[in-house]
Amino acid sequence: MKTSIRIGGPNTGGPEFFQSILELAVDAEKLGVDRAWSAEAWGMDAIAPLAYIAARTTRLELGTGIMQVCARTPASTAMTAMSMQTVSDGRFLLGLGNSGPQVVEGLHGQPFDRPLTRMRETVEIVRMATRGEKLAFDGKAFALPRRGGQGKALRLAQPPVEVPIHLATLTPRALEMTGEIADGWLGTSFTPDVAEAHLAHLRRGAQKSGRKLSDLELCVDVSVAITDDPEPLIQSHKPSLAFQLSAMGSPTMNFYNDAYARSGFEDACREVRDLWLAGDREASVRAVPDEMVRATTLIGDDARVRERVRLYRDVGIGELMLHPWGRHATARLDMLGRAIEIVRQESPA
Image 1 (cartoon, rainbow, N blue to C red):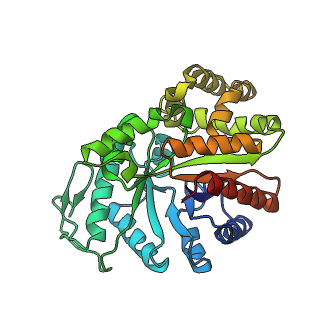
Image 2 (cartoon, helix red, strand yellow):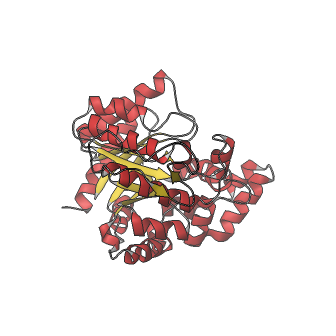
Image 3 (cartoon, rainbow, N blue to C red):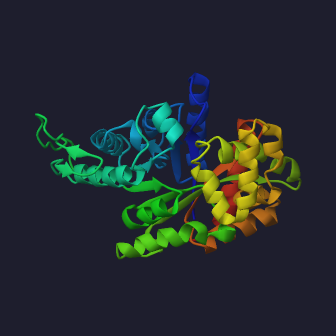
């Protein structure tokens, strides 16, 4: 199994934060981490930090996890991806995601309509561009050149280059599309105990394009804390889960909530969201079951963490995006190192 880290995300920015993620990436490469994925929401963008990190590392693969489809035109996405592949000396991976209606409509002012069509057509146009083709495309979400306008089909001046495309998807239809068209999947809200809640849809999509599920790179993110006293950490993890189940979407559309519900936590997901939306956030946090935290993290003693890593391995997950717990940077780095060693030992090449 590969290991990776995530940098960026909501509420990120400023010199101090950037210095911290730069140091993490450089140190993670020394520890043997394979990849770093940069998230963007309403904090730092996904590309600028990776471009800088590319100049400070030599082996670490650098991916966007994710670039928001709504925030750029497909041609701009392609130009950026090809530029990153050049400046990183071939270490770039393009991770795309649709985000949700609150970010798409609230931050970017774009309608959250036909999200799967937008993603599918974005992938098609990006691949046309990376192959060096003229961008002549007549789709439902995008038309190049613009219909009735004065433009003509253009090709990017950059030389053709291969750019692996990973999709961050959660709904059954989106997962099926990922299996059909993507090189990899960036997964969240995933529990290996009920892996088929996600993998069955990915497998069905892969079969549509004549592939097997094993032809996709499957990466899921997971918090990790190796400790003989897991209870305090389980409780400390609940606020972020409550936020994800309730606030990472609109009151009527929350893909994270739906994904956890499909994994066997339907009643808890409904209760947590209802309490949050009613304004009782403390009760909402308390309503997050301990088992939901245990099922979706690597929190526990050495034996339990090893058992969970083997379970991820056995269901076909090929990469763990590790979020190490620690009270300060040194502690988090130490935890990351311990986790990497366990993954190596439990999934030998």
